[in-house]
Image (cartoon, rainbow, N blue to C red; front, side):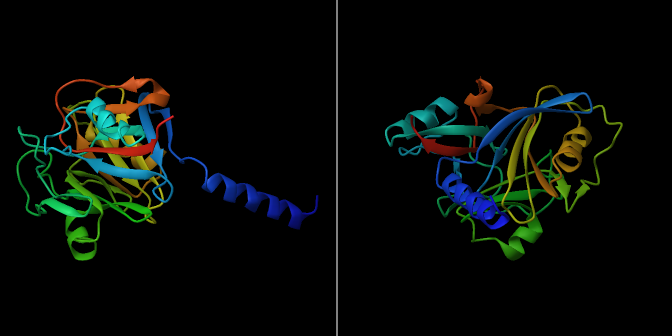
Length: 250
């Protein structure tokens, strides 16, 4: 087979692949003696969404309730993860947009806790793209343009640099989860640690192992993953915002 024929065959296979199923991939990786579960999403192909309230206006709170709501439409979650901090009533602390409707405004000022450890950021899902952006940059370039958005903090990686307040010798360790994206928005990777890690360790995984220039922290007290491919459907306390990929039910 000559080069031209091989190229045509490759393009044909690529085209067939792009129309079949999703690009979602979940796996476990080790980095500096720590284990992490991650789900990698291609926003141009995967149906990536945020979930907070059901059709009756009640917070979903659990992965199984989201799946129950999707099942009536012949759909299911391919993967899901808690996606941002929330109040006791599970309302989001920061900016939140679902299906183009703003539920909570942007919080741009420093404040208490991890959310207020600026720079914080926003995870924005647009047509064919998903982006983590520092909050002030988001307000200048993306506000009002996201189909889905959730604000959280702190940023883990900003333009390839770790958050300036992360210390290599920190003793503050928690189970942590978050998301990192490529600059082009064609790659979004959702990560949860298997054991308690520092901010510096967690952020370094995004930058040095996954080579992602932007990454955002979701939580450290409520870090949960739904990933059937990894045999995980974490249960526990009620969640607020949840991010997930929707697939056709088998």
